[in-house]
Length: 236
Image (cartoon, rainbow, N blue to C red; front, top):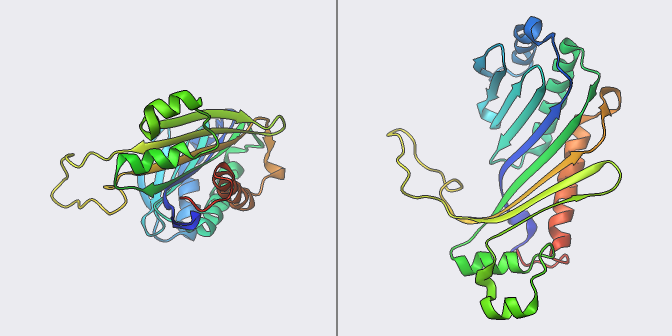
């Protein structure tokens, strides 16, 4: 038995969609110049007419932006504070140059994992989740082995929707690796993935958006949801 806090972060995504920002083609170089001025470790991975991609290796952060979307990802890090501040700065910078005033969709996707050693251990964790309601005769017949994955979507009837995907992931240990690449402890271990995408269902005005606060609040919502699905019991 361990606590929620011991779940391992795999990836956190912050994505904003908007009507076509035609000024992208006039501005992507200027945007890169401003971001690199604040984040000295910025690396330009790709620049093109369809999208630009930059990364901050020391933060494990990647930024993609295009005429239709801004997507920011942090991998294998719990530093949500730095991630949310980076998102706030870059979103404001990009929207300023592209003259974006509203978003058709804003999504926060959180993927954390509980490492397990056996299939039975994974199935037990999924079996106890309140998102799932297996008829008792079926559960008695098959036991925990019946559960491999839980998927569903919910809407709060107001401003947000939720996509849930809880699944037992088995990593392929036989995938060839380049000579200079050593699989880390996270990417090479099996576990139960707790994947929740929290997204807006109505347009959002830029003037009302505080990216840093939104990401931190949705991180709290993610933790609350995980705990509530297990009746706040420490079973993870």
